[in-house]
Picture 1 (tube, rainbow, N blue to C red):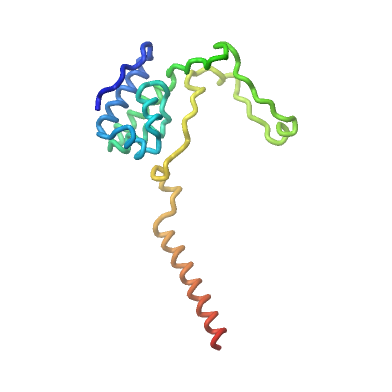
Picture 2: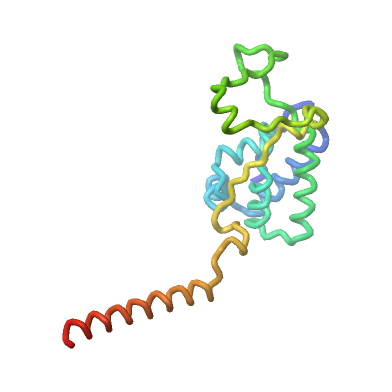
Length: 182
C-alpha cells in the first residue's frame, strides 16, 4: 500500500488532487488492484490507468470504489464533485503515431439510405469544443449489484410470480389427472 509511482508532471491541480484522494481511498480498502478489480467490475489494468492519472475513471468506477471502501454518502458525494472537476480539465491523450496533432479525426462514410433511415443528430455549435470535459464520455456500465433498486424486481413480486406459476402448474396437473382417470 502507498508505493505509488509519481504522478505525471504538468497535471492540472484538480486532477492531481482527485487522483491523490482516489489513491488514499484505494489504500484504505486494503485491497490489491486485482482484488479491487474483482469487487468493482473494473480490471486491474483499468485501475492502474485511473490511479496513475493516465486515463480518467468513469464515474461508476469512482462510485464502486466508494462502495467498496465503505464511504458515507457525504464523502461519496465529495468524490463525485472531485471527479467532475477533474474530468473537465483532464489532459487529452497523446496523438497516436501516424496522425498529425491538428488533423481532424476521420469521419466514417455512411450510405445515403442509412442517413435517411437513421439520421445522426448533430451537436449544436455552441456545445462543440467549448468545454474540455465535453469530449469525455462516462462509461455507462454498471455491475449488476450497483443497478438501481427500481430496476430490480422486488422480492414480493418474485414471490407472487412464483406462487402464480405454481398454482397454474397445480391446476394443470389436476386437470390432466381428472381427464386421465375421469
